[in-house]
Length: 256
Picture 1 (cartoon, rainbow, N blue to C red):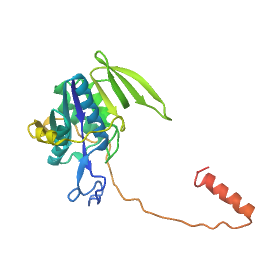
Picture 2 (tube, helix red, strand yellow):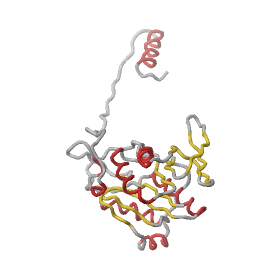
Picture 3 (cartoon, rainbow, N blue to C red):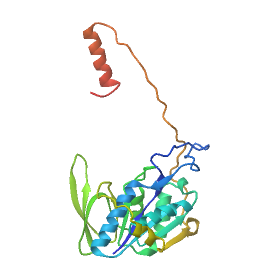
């Protein structure tokens, strides 16, 4: 079985973010980066499927040269090879253009399964997996909490609302969006880190893929919310004050 896993490099959770002069993104020159946490669960699930059923796991990441580090981490954990879709300005792409680029880079691989994390920790659109499935013409299921392999089919446990789950089946090949918490991602071993140095990372320039990247949506401005507070004194008798407070909680704060 051949499994492709999309792994994205995102700003580290504890990075001191500064908004760029354009106002549309952050300044990346002085912060650290790490693998998108939801994608770590997708990678772990791919590795477990490989260990149980055999096959190959290919880590795919789009971004500048530094994105190769995310691929190398996946290789150190057990992925067999990587594909780097190189583009220094990839953060300007909307989800559709990103999915088109990934689909073009992955189309010739003929994957049986493609796994993505539920969403990215930076922009959090949660659309790439669904769009990738549509562009590749493959069935798709979201918020996956368990995968069971059948004969050229997969049985999937999906998380619904209010603690409910459902089981569905899908034919292969398919694209699945993995829910965080499906497993416990492993750490790379020293042996794995050494082995990763010998594994292949193929680089594909995104510009060479010939995909349409005219945005269907774009970020106009990002900003840090302003902290404000307001104090209001409620006057009148205790009964009148209670009635006024109840009115404000119900219609202004909307907490009751």
